[in-house]
Amino acid sequence: MARKTKDGWSEHPARLLRVDDDFSLEQLDRRSTPGWTGTKQQGKEAAKARGPLLSELQERLFAHGRTGGTRSVLLVVQGMDTSGKGGVVRHVIGMVDPQGVALRAFGRPTEEELRHHYLWRVRKALPSGGYIGVFDRSHYEDVLVPRVEGLVEPEVWDKRYEEINKFEREVVDSGTTVIKVALMTSREEQGLRLMERLQRVDKHWKFDPADVDARRTWDDYQEAYADLFARTSTEVAPWYVIPADRKWYSRLAVTELLTRALIDLDLSWPKPRWKVETQQRRLAETMEEATLAEAERSAKKVRRKVEEDEKAFAAAVARART
Image 1 (tube, helix red, strand yellow):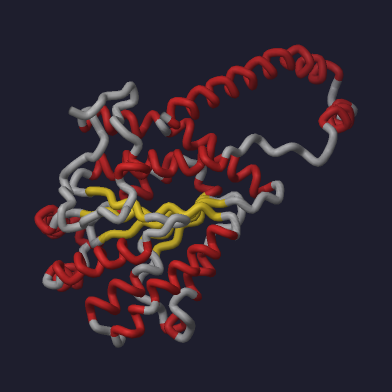
Image 2: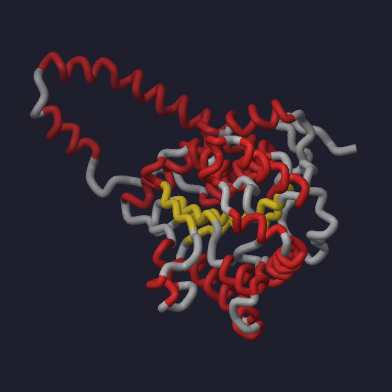
């Protein structure tokens, strides 16, 4: 029996979902919820409860970027159609300040992009210092689609695995933490989700007839994904494969993975390059006497609030590390 913990996890998803030498996509139960010992409702509540911590972690990252820091995070979200990529963006990334997020969706390459190396458009979309970058689909489409649809010769897409490994190593070495998540639904669940889109007039805009064509090559895509995980899950940029038949679990797992990655950056608030006392004195010179007196009266309260917030943040980080 799984060991139940206070936060609902028997083990952190960063360990449970990471692709290792023993991973088998064929044996993955896509309705499972690895490590989660609570109910669906508790899972939704746990993901929502991470919001304040995730938000502050992202703000600290953004603050470092605004003061010259080069650290960033890249969340790669890969999966078949209807796997829940958009839901992850809305429900997980939606909990942080959008000004610190760089979102890029990768679809069919444009004419201009086709005139360049396939990684050209990807390099342009990498997050700069202080940002959380999100790729809705990614450079992995340039392996999966050409392979399954026979768009190029096998020797062309085959060499891309190692090219991508080298590229991601460069990205990590430049200061970006890479989190690669693959949302894997069952064929049955995907069929139900596509059918619902056809049944709902408000979802017709999301339906693409090509999705049905892709289902006819389902087994080929699963084989391609299995190879992709085996050949591009590296020490610096591992894959996390998430069973995605239960959307709430996917969102909860990604929330935990992103939170852990931001915690591991271990960022404190950046120190200013100017002296606080000097700027306080300069500001005081521009304030009315009554307003300045009000600010001085509230100083102790402000300091106490900051101390309380720091203690609460440290406690939340400690709980999230377990």
